[in-house]
Image (cartoon, rainbow, N blue to C red; front, side, top):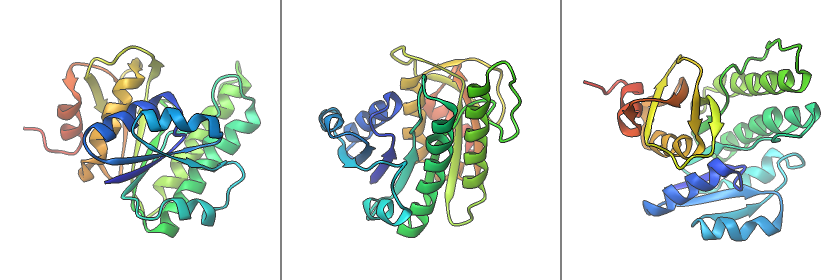
Length: 222
């Protein structure tokens, strides 16, 4: 299975690439800078050099040839201004959806965020409000695609622990935190569970194993 990950040098992406490579699959990660390539190679992934803020859908689609799935895990990151929340967190996600359709790749996993909402109102922090709106708009754009088997994953506050393998995954959960390693583990499980297509799921640390949580979300529990 070939999975192409946008934002291939991010922490969640690197975790995911290692997991997919360990199970014998062929992950590839889209990166902006050549010096990031070795980290992907070390993780078992193929580096694909492309600036998502400058690319066309046709150019990106060429990188998706032969892919079975795409994962949007890119983000402007902390410290970036409001403008890049739109060009990366929103526009690049839509570009990946356009490219996936052009390349005939149906499976699309979106790494979103809890409270993402195109109409979010957070006057105390204009940049954070823009981020939530950008993520919400991206989710809406992807969920409108009938040519994609999408799943939107909305993690809570991201932490850098080693991962516990225990999560809570449902359409709505209480606010909480989750290790990036566990987000990657859930993404890896979602890639193997087509029954989660068409779902928007929130994710925090919990008491169910990743496999149990994903199976339950797909309606396979019990």
